[in-house]
Length: 205
Image (cartoon, rainbow, N blue to C red; front, side, top):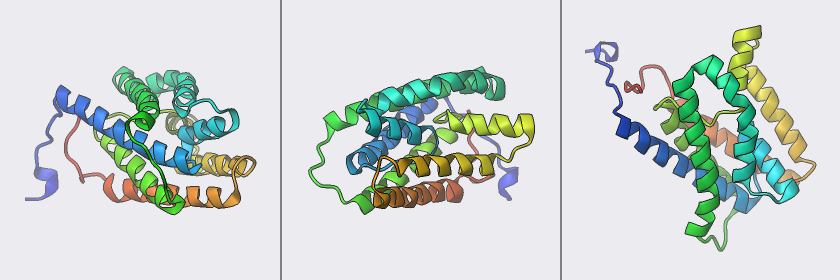
C-alpha cells in the first residue's frame, strides 16, 4: 500500500494543545541557548534578538510586540483558526523564553554547540508547530502574503530579509557571532527541510 492510500487522521484538541506546549518549550530552550551565547536567528525572532542586544529589554517582550502587526495578515492569509493558534504560540514562546532562564542555570556554554543545538531545538519546535497548524508568525506570514499578492517568491524574500538581519547584526555583534548564527540557521533549516515534506506526516488539525 502506498502512503497516498492511507487515511488522514485528524488531530484531537488535546493533541494540538500538547504539541503547542512541547513545541514552544523546544523553541524557548533554543532561544535561551542563543541569548546566553549572544547569537541570533533569522525572521521575526532575529529582529527580537537584535533589539534585545541593543536595548537590554527581554527577548520575549520584543518577540511578542513585533508580531502584533502581522496578525491582520495572518487572518487574511490563513484564517482565524491559524491566527489564533499562532497568537497562542507566540505568547507561549514569549513567556517560556523568559521563564527558562529561571528553570535552568547555564554556567558555561560553548558558542559553536549553542549555535548548532539552539538551531536544532528551534527547528524541532517549529516542525512540531507546523504539523499542528501553527507557526511563529511574523515575517513568515509576510512573505507568504507578498507571494500571493505580488508574485514575489517567498523563499527569495525570506532569504533577503534574513540576510539584512545578519548584516545589521554586524553593527551590534562580533563578526564571529554572526558567522555562528548563520551556522545555527543552517542547522535549523536542515531540520525543517528534511522532515517537513508532503506525505511525510499524515495528521491534520
